[in-house]
Image (cartoon, rainbow, N blue to C red):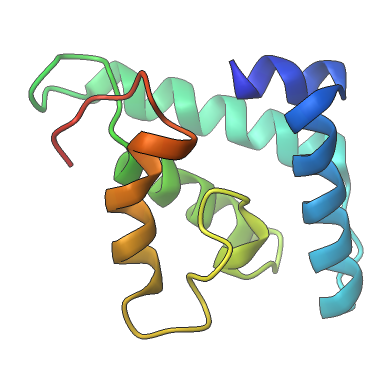
Length: 114
């Protein structure tokens, strides 16, 4: 649902785009928001097609975070550019805690097994 809000640039989707843009600006990274979106959609498709953990083809919060982090790295952006893990780069266990709590805050329909 958040992905649809991002595509429509409304509500929480608009916040996600603004967060990503602000992080990119702070990092001094020039980004193509549309290309990042396409890359994220492809990454989501690819991981979903091979997911056989717990509920087949239903991703967990950590799986969603992982593919976001990989795509962001390709675009020279830090982990915290993904709104689901805004503290991932700032603390030793930030992304672990965020992956565990993510299913309660931003990934409520996700597979509960990481």
